[in-house]
Amino acid sequence: MSDREWLWIAGECYLVGFALGTWSLFRRGAGREGGRPSTALVYGIIAAGYLLQLLGLYLRGRAVGGCPLGNTFELFQFTAWSATTFYLVVGVSFRSSILGYFTACLSAVLTLSSLAIPAWDAVRRANLFGGNPWIEFHAALAIFSYGAFALLTLTALMLLLRDHSLKHKHLGGWFSFLPSLIELDQISRRLLGTGTAIMTASLLVGTVYWVSAPETVNLAKLMATLGVWAAYSVTLGLRAKERLISRRFAWVCIAVFALALLALGPVDSSRHALPPPTKAPAAPATPQAREAPLAPALKTTPAKGGTL
Image (cartoon, rainbow, N blue to C red; front, side, top):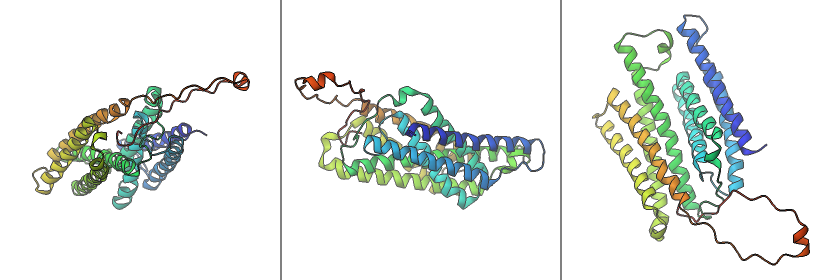
């Protein structure tokens, strides 16, 4: 099976988890007994999708010779996998089935939508990082932090829903699945701190290479990354000082993540701006070569390290 086939199955697992949670919530909303989603079942389905997605990304990584971050399709897949990674850790700590429900929805949307748009995977870049482990590690950490920020956005949405339910005294039905404001605040602070720390580490790792080869730095990509890091760092500082709390904190987290997704544009365009590889002079054809069938054209393009 190809990497895309494994990723299709992973996306379907996420979709099944989301559908199961939706069915359970409707049963609960209708007042039927036994409608509460099984935390173990939802967790198991998401974990199965996570392992299948990991296998798909591993096969893609072997095919392109590095971390699969070379096009929009791979960025979406890696972000979905990262968000699921954080849920599998956070979900155990807080035993929140509703967080698994939202995570299944997010992962299904990111995974299946990227698979459904062939143009996002039209070009595969081999050796994207030029064999430089520092740049590859930097890029992987940066996108991994997006997984934490994606899960932070989900908890911010849940916080808004819980705040709405308390103000309007809607405590029954599917609102009863929502964690308390205290739990949501704890989850949000941990995810914000973890994501910011990972992105900080990503920038520090990238600096190790950029200092020695400043000519390889793409200014648009660097400014976009620094802007995202600064926005989350300021948000973290204001939350620590309790300048941002409750609804305002939730809305800021959602807005900053929307800007972070827009920042992926300059990152991806910096890859498209790479010059095409120079072709070696064609060797004179031999009789054997004339008789050999033509090999299919590859869709991979090599890239120099440091210009991801």
